[in-house]
Length: 102
Image 1 (cartoon, one colour):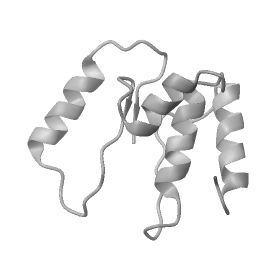
Image 2 (cartoon, helix red, strand yellow):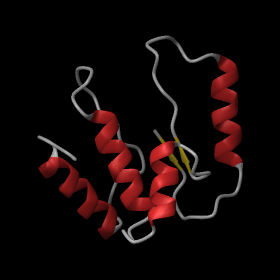
Image 3 (spheres, helix red, strand yellow):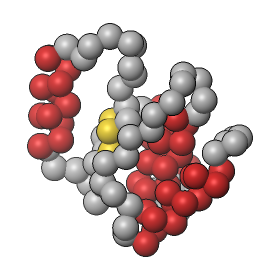
């Protein structure tokens, strides 16, 4: 459920559907206000607009989808090894038109 960000999410979703969503989105704000939730919902919509594909939607939510990479910000600097892994993953082929990092 999305509380307080529905209007923002709907705008981002309509831009994605129209093919005009900028490929890089930065969600900025205090902690625990829903930035990651909006990003995950948008990624799910972009990767799986067919809401009946429950398996893919579950994989995205759990972080096990190969084309939707989720890494948590623990408040520390990302180690160079993790950055290298992210860059290497981006260079690999993927099944869907979008490769999304959250």
